[in-house]
Image (cartoon, rainbow, N blue to C red):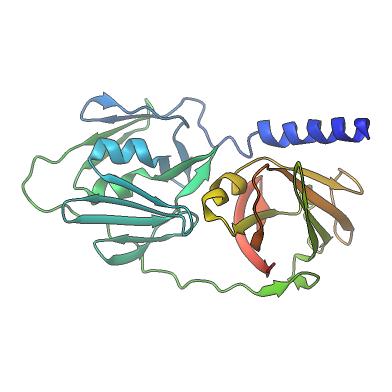
Length: 281
């Protein structure tokens, strides 16, 4: 038993301490607002040509009030008549009630919320310039008395509906089959048991990622962004046509109950598309 616990702790540390994806350039990006460098706990990252930075530091520099709803995962910034709304993991964005779609959504990295810098900056009327040679972004407050030029995102994409199942039911698509078997609450954490079958030509090392909806929403952010261990018949890759029965173990000492589990696909360690959710109540 002691040996098993030691192995489990080692695996937990591996997943907790190892970054899912570096997302960082060889030279860290520096951000300046009117000549003053902004400080971040997590370095800015670039995804598909969009720079994402910590929203609190950016909002403070731009004079925006800071709002975050843990239940809806909505980020809000207000300044006078200006109201900006973004949602973690969603390309939908709203500026003064005008809806549109971002190229890259806001996301959470290492426990910090990152938002698209240019979109937020230009929404306030600031000028945003990128110095690729020096990896520097300069944000300059507009001296004009004209109203801010609000970015015009692409038309809002329809919200994709995903199937809702009960524990014991199986989700299937062209890439995989997955069945949520049971959930167990232990004194040291939460265990999610499932069966997985790989249908794709791409070997899978980790089946995917679960996101939690809890009876106490204030703990969702913490649980959804913490490390976990994956235990199965084998720690190797799952090849096409192979199946695994295993579980994810989350070290979590809060007295909570899961209301809903959403399963997301993974690509290069990054959480991607939401595929299915299970009602646990």
